[in-house]
Image (cartoon, rainbow, N blue to C red; front, side, top):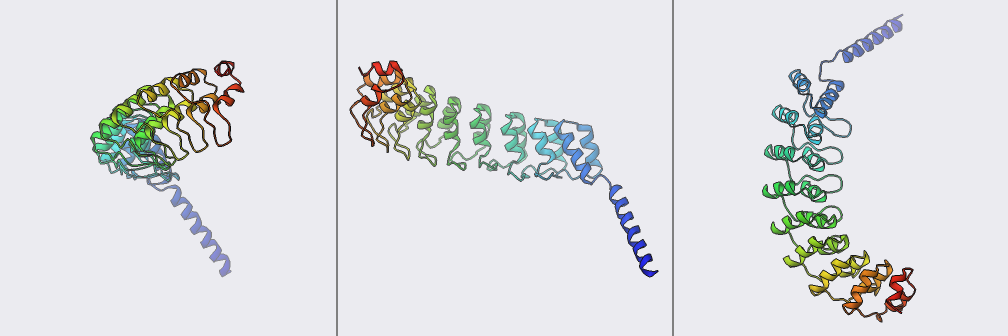
Length: 315
């Protein structure tokens, strides 16, 4: 009998606990979720109501995403302002390492980044890929945002997980205007990523004539080589960028330099079947007799090239 009474009391206690959980005030998980959703759609009335009722402005989901992050990502300035004024942590980081500032930068939300910076957002915060807001802005060619971050004093030489600084990222993606701004701001021109590639090499590979021109004018070393021995000229030729190759040669690039495999710019141009680049290099004095590590010369490569226009140049 005593056991039955004990079991009944236990079940009654469980029922009370369940009822208590169901009737919890707006500090519950569901209310925090509602706050995050309201911030995402800029529902200011709901945000203020929930905060007035005691909801934690930093309540995060399982991924560490907060209401402020949702507002920042969607460019909802009023929602973000209210959340910040009511205690939202501007530097709260998600599981992936994202902050409101990195998310705003990713979405190109210029006004939002300005607001967050005014409220003390950390410009050194990095996402999972190791990119800070400046790198993110450089990646997407967001000139005004780059200017904003540079003005605020963001460090220029921080590198991501691939060893790429904002300048390298901008050059890699062909954003000449950002490259120009970073050069003028004092970015290191000779810094190289984990592959030994400089901004000049990235711009040359991309075929960005303006970027290459600016980097050369600023003093980039034209014959600096990456870890595989390739120079900017070889990188340009490997993608068939004849105009960039010509620009590099005008600025003193060594036309016959070989990479670690013994390949010259001419051999690379033949391999990608770029008749215009092959013709340019031959006209500029490239030596077709130079052999690679396999003992094959550019002449031999040219005569067997699948592009008839290239083959004709070696008849």
